[in-house]
Image (cartoon, rainbow, N blue to C red; front, side, top):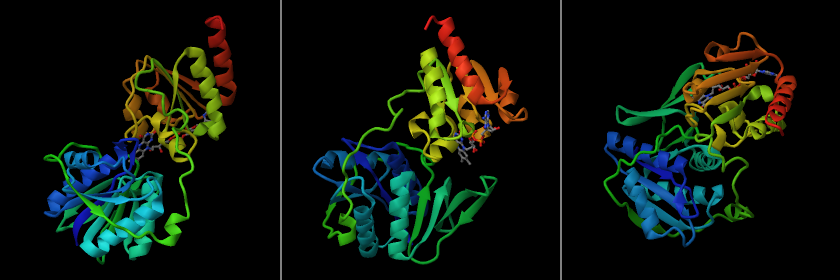
Length: 325
Ligand SMILES: Cc1cc2nc3c(=O)[nH]c(=O)nc-3n(C[C@H](O)[C@H](O)[C@H](O)COP(=O)(O)OP(=O)(O)OC[C@H]3O[C@@H](n4cnc5c(N)ncnc54)[C@H](O)[C@@H]3O)c2cc1C
């Protein structure tokens, strides 16, 4: 096996952070294996030579550029499958996110390759890659090695750190691809920002963070109302982000953002270590949880044991009354 191929998603003139993490990780591992790291980009005229070459700063030796619809999985599978067949890359690496999962799974099926998803770390050992993946509710780590010509490794969202570890610009090579008929059946109709994506939780003085205890995505209304009353912002745990209840931009923790507001209020959050590392620097920590033994109470300044559905609306009313609203 030789050569690592990564996919870089771009939007409106910039590569996405998660993709840059994958490109950086691919370059780091390729160096250890003594092989080439290359990136694949698929899109229109806005994928200029200059923009593509910037992937070299993150360690890509080469960028394969194909004209095609940006942001859809099928065409990228066609492009990567062709490159792997013709140029013999041994690994395909993705930064996670929905598109990474879709393309990686499609590629593994197309090339009959082994695939590992939700990977949190990769290392080079005895000339091959070994992928680590948490299993059994993240209590154990499983290790995957790959048989055959190709291994497909799909990271957890933001598991791979974006590092400017390259020497300069990458060489850009154009690739002509004939897309499969089924790859062209889906069209991008609209693209936009998710709710909350514009909120900068790192700058907020007051944060209401919601967890799985909110019950469902609608439960975030209670957090929104309290944050509005305070003039603060809403944040979330990874569990709810993974469940699609809240956008990733609001995630606090090891694989999210680190915050240090004046007041951090946790509603329905257990207080896992991976969450704690992102908020433990907050000046005041208040937690509402119906389980008196929830770990979050061990590092809260004020703990309220009770049902958030009853407590949050009352708190919002009290804050509004106090602030004259
Ligand atoms: C490599 C790795 C990276 C990770 N990165 C992150 C990260 O960046 N950020 C992060 O947050 N997590 C991260 N996690 C996940 C983390 O381990 C936990 O799974 C997650 O934080 C749990 O989220 P939660 O507290 O919302 O859910 P749960 O652990 O399910 O907790 C829900 C809580 O709500 C309470 N509750 C339920 N109903 C109510 C109610 N009506 N009123 C009051 N309380 C109620 C329950 O008692 C419980 O304590 C990571 C895990 C791994 C392995």
